[in-house]
Length: 77
Image (cartoon, rainbow, N blue to C red; front, side, top):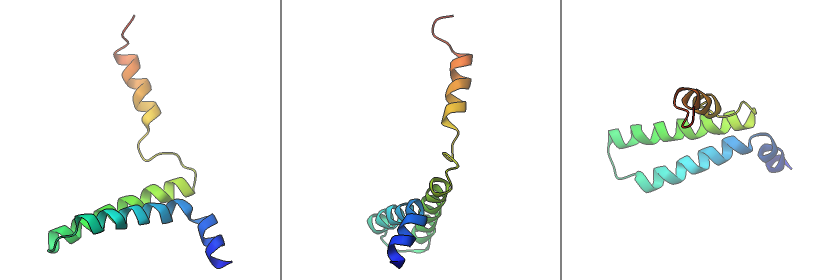
């Protein structure tokens, strides 16, 4: 029961961290800077999952960027 509740509440975060861990395993060779890069990947995965869990949309406001670009460079004026 605990795992189902955990999955229902934190699905995005768990998937983000799982993806980050997968990328870390692929990337890991050895050394301090590689580990720092792995921590960055883990943070980005967790943060993206958190945004998905809280239904805050995307980290990057793609729609606003697209609208701004189309207003600046409309192909047929």
